[in-house]
Structure formats: structure tokens, C-alpha cells
Length: 279
Image 1 (tube, one colour):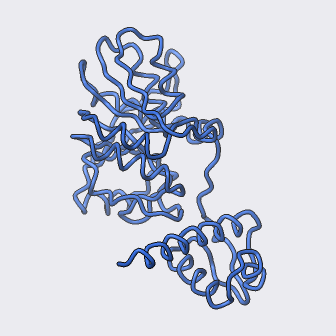
Image 2: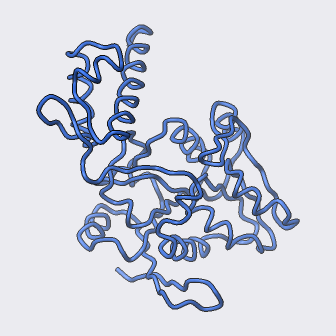
């Protein structure tokens, strides 16, 4: 691939992401409207919409596109922290059992990882690598935790650091276990809507001996733009008991090491209780 082809490919990718954002904001758009908005020919817009349609993130209609009924929409950390709370708490309980004293672990910017962080602050010996400011703040005053905060460009929406500096800092380290989440799962593939976040997550995966995906059941079957990885790239996938049985069967049949946290709405000592569901 020539450098000119690479530039054109990157430009098309950026334009398609901007088109998707525009359509999501309005619920739909006409081809002429998009051509004028993004200063592109109708033919170019047709090709872009065809690509987005094939990825399932828009629906073609006469003269334009609309958003499908189940397209993922990311929000701020505060908004995401209030979604699927009991599921995330149950997942965090199972994930905690995978952490041993003295481990070196990595935690991504996800709110599910932050739920896990809250359960690890009293560990007697732990090294934590993270690009999340919120997660780092949980460990900052804990003398028992050796904290390494990856730098880079701060993103207020995600309360975390991204970019080349973050990725380079991660590349200089090695960790026992990575705990991370994604925005959406469709079939056997994990997706996220932000390229910078994907790059940071991939940098953390590259330095981890064991990779654990923490993903609540509401994210299965949801659509977002950018492919991140296949589920087979993770050593463990932890979700909650809201997962549909046919999806569970598909994952187990594909050889995914799946752990499912049973959620109990009964609260003991102010925390949700959970146990792993047997296959």
C-alpha cells in the first residue's frame, strides 16, 4: 500500500466516523444533506453509507440513512457508572478472585474496571498500571499499592489518558493480568467507538500475560463502529447472568473461557453478592 493510498484510507475512515456521528445526532440524514455537509460527491457519500450499512451502524432508506434501533451510544464516565450497576458489581466480584497478592495488574479506563478497583484498594501488596485518572485516585492514598499512572493526552469525557505518550509508556512495562472492557460485542468480535481508546487498550493487551474481558450482558448484540479484537484473544471473559442462553452456548462452543456472575439483588453489608454460574 502506497503512502498516498494510506492517507486516502485514513481520510475516508475519518469522514465515515463523522458521518456516523452526524446521523446519530439527528436520527437520520439525506444523501444530498451529507454531501453538502462533508463537501463530498454523492457517489462518495453512497460508498461511505454502503460501508457503514454493511457494518450495521446505519440503515439505508430511500434517499438517505437512519440509525438502527440498537446502536451503541457512549456517554461520560458519570453516565456509564450508573448503567448496569448490579451486573458490574457482580462481575467485579468474580474478577477479584483472579487477583493474587503481589500481582502486577493493568486496569483500563472502563467503569467496570473501576468497580473492580474499588474492591482491590485494601489488598496488602499490589502493583496497578492504569491510564484512568479515576482509578488512579482510588489507589493514590494506599501505601500498600504501587501505582503507575500512564500519561498522555487527558480526555475529560472518559477521565483518562490516551495518545502516543500513553501507548509508549505502556510498551515499557509488563503485567501479570489485564482487566478491561469494551463498548460492544457482536458475534465473536469486540468493538469500540473511539480509535484513541482502542489504541490504548491494544497497548495494554500487548504487555499482559493474561487478558480478562469484563463485559456486562447489555453490551452483547450492540453495534458500534470500530472493530477492536476477537473474543478468542482473551484468556477469560466475565459477564453476568443476564446473558441470553443462546449467546452463552455460542461462546462456550467456540472455546471461550466464559465466567458468568449470578446477580443477587439482596444486599449484604451494602454490597451486591454474586457467585459464578456453572455451565
